[in-house]
Image (cartoon, rainbow, N blue to C red):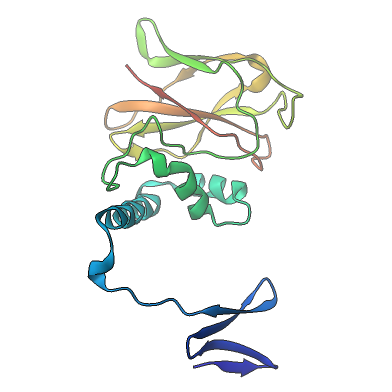
Length: 206
């Protein structure tokens, strides 16, 4: 049933749907219902993949990481940006995720060139990180801070401040204690005011 509000029509009339989009009245054809058996195997797999990715977003992504995607999203929701960014990381049916392809940060802040991370010899709880200082190029600033997300047996921490800043070009990070073996870390940079973030890079822990 369509409703008239102040001269505007909203709702469905026959096969037409009336709605407001960006402040303007729009008329669309109502979507046709599809029989359950009309979906191809590939379409069903894709729907299952998207459904599992949505569950991953809801249950496995910390709220602080969701906020990063909210800040980075333009003309879409934080979830849609996460979906667009991470579809390649999930297997065909979405039941498994490739941590190397997963991204838990996004934004316009540049990720430094030649970002590398290696275990400190003789101390598996420390990681040496090096990068090239690109302060002044684009939005990069000398005091942008190196942040880290830790993956432990399929669970992820919120972004952790390391205290290291872009202009240093090197840092030794102490991995915090916790339950479960560390699979790897995601490194990214954040502005001092935490209004801008960079994409991240995965480093597996050997």
